[in-house]
Amino acid sequence: MNRVLLTALPSLLVLGALAACATAEPSSAPTAGTTTSAVAKTTTTAPAGPPPVPEPAADGQCPYLASSVVQEANGQLVRKVRLSADPSRPACFFYANATDVQLSVWVFEGEPATAEAVVDRAAPVADSSPASAPAGWAGGSLTTDTGAVYAVAKGGRAVVVTSNQKQTIKARRIAETVVGNLGL
Image (tube, rainbow, N blue to C red):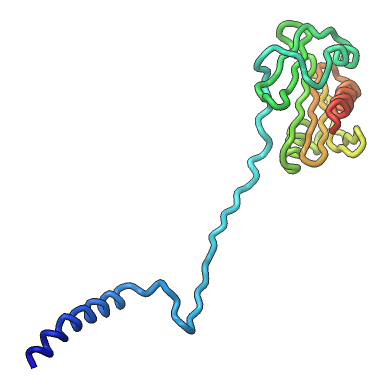
């Protein structure tokens, strides 16, 4: 009988230890007849809004708008051109003298909602006249204390033109030229 106890005792101890562990933690493996489900946690974030307005960073030539076109449309000599830091498609700033920007052009490309936010910030819908040129583009034009703004979007693209002249037609002509030059 001692021999049976000596042989069975270690097996009983192991079985008891396993039983104790099983009651402390539930099994992670599904057993027959049980169903498991996974819950996925999703988070949503609100759109970040339009990106910051570009600032002039370096002297250069605008890759999509000639200074001569700006001079003709805006009616002032272009003394220098500065570009924003965006390497893919910089915003262009055309100066009438050493310190005063006479005209700026910003071409934005991204999500359609962000493009619309760029336009709405430049020419708020509530305060501006509707703008629909070039064909298929929509936005606003606005005369400000310092000049005029013409801003339009189409899909994920926006073109914003500001001028120190009070006539929005000048900014509109520049926007049409930029869209044509870039094949947008």
